[in-house]
Image (cartoon, rainbow, N blue to C red; front, top):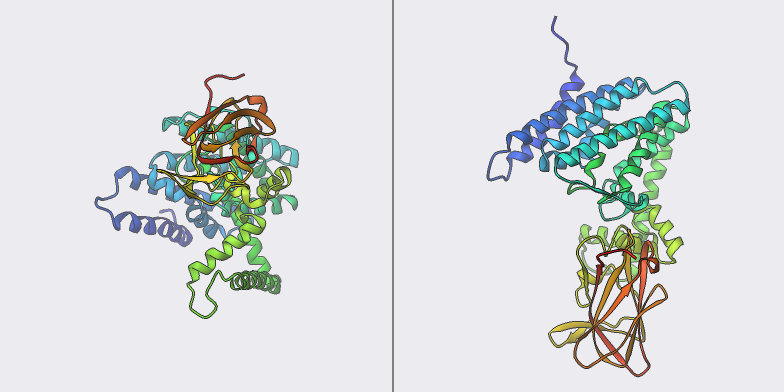
Length: 446
């Protein structure tokens, strides 16, 4: 007797294979490679296993296909499948098989579920590291940087893939109601997050973080919980969803009025939707930080006494990470993340572009891993320039009409994780025109 293939399985395979194939064959000078096609088939097989796992989890049959497709198209899985064929597919299906075997033995008590979830997290971390090592990427160990690895714009997982935040909320919601698989999944994800935050770099791959590919089935479980919650809420309390949608529209209208008042959009002419959306996003991020970085940017603002929006620029950045960081004071792309108060507008200084120090000027130097550093300030002018870092005097130098480099050395104990405050002060009556500031790690530690 032939095995019966369910209609939902056929629909899932079609939805998982046909759009990527159409993308691969369109606009390309050559046909997709065999590894890419094979990886796509492996991913499709992994989604079938994931869908069956979600269906067997209890009460999720109606959303299992949607959650599986959201796991493919709402995360970086498809990108990694196309860009890194083979490795991403094996990591995903390996994690899917591990999760399916684990979910049937999740334990009979919350403590048992957490312990087995932690063991699953260790296994998933090992699978991710093996996959990275097979690709020739050998990370190094360092002090954990959990918030940055999750929320920073520098490949923070939840910043880049915000749908996974909804998945975590779904797992937390079900775990609070006594669902042992959800509790164990949270434990596994916590272990994987700590392991990943202890590695440098904490991302792997060009989109978000490929080390979390083996854990996508656990996120898929959380997405299924979210979709099931929305489905049941729409049936039982439809006005609640209508109120939430209305709240979003009210927020949109308030942001639109703020744009109109600030004359960010024309008052008597047409305006494009992308411009309105971009302005709204800027206003919201300027006031409360980027929503994709909540609550890390709020914690940053409370600890550093800086606006939450600063975290979106500085979070996860490390000026000593690898090669020297050169901040060109006339380049908006170079200086945007680091510039503080006390700087003039840009103006030419011979062949260079400078900013003038208005008595006292602040530059933020973000660090994740502390080590001794050299600081070079390229400046010209007159008077005595004093350079301090976090309140520690680094150097004093008398400026000349031609460009000179003021060199200073910062000890590791004078530095701190997060934004370090580099303060440039010029004596009264003097002038300091700064063209660039360069920061580079020293060879040893002190």
